[in-house]
Image (cartoon, rainbow, N blue to C red):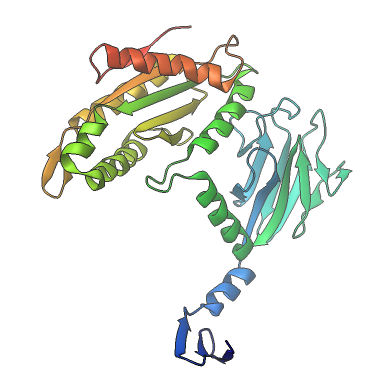
Length: 317
């Protein structure tokens, strides 16, 4: 069938007129705010974007002053690898100028394939290699915002907005590498009690509300800024707590339990009773993999369910 396509363009939107032997279709395409895009492309927003490594796609925006990079948790950019020194390198932002400096690291800092010996001023699209992690330096907000948006979509659970299972596993594996250097690490795994009953009684839309409200509550009122909260699957969630001993993690788990029990979950005028069962585990060297570590926490969660639900179970190393 022959087709004659004509397009009418204006400053940011366009209309396609498609003429066939049987009909005429008019397709109006959404307006693109080109001024906004151009503004972002010209706006300074220095950042390091991970283009190789376990944190692929993650964006680290650079504030004024010094941002350190290294293995220890007090760095602005933490790379959890043995080949990376505790305080490996730093970037110093002075207005529109960003300077990279190695901090006498064991294995060095690579800038565009060369190991740096003295501070270097970074340029757009420079590549920085520390351990096996490679960063691209970006100066414009368009590049930074676009990459950040893609990373968010690929690492978060669509319903709740917290991290997804793939991101959690990657983060936990990295956190274990840091723990091997002597830093504490704990996890809290929890499950909403009788969640099937919520769906059956109040409907699946109400169940979705409960899941979203649960993550909002925990993020807003319980967890620390350095903790990593994600949806493990269904009504099960995982909280990774870097640099946290068992006592701290148990305290957080108990606050989660109480918060869930005391909060009024109200959907379409219906009050929905919600409680959670939790298991808490601290990493020890005998736990060789992330799966081994999670298995301990999962067994403790199962113990909480066996003993009546709405409780926290833990085991000292």
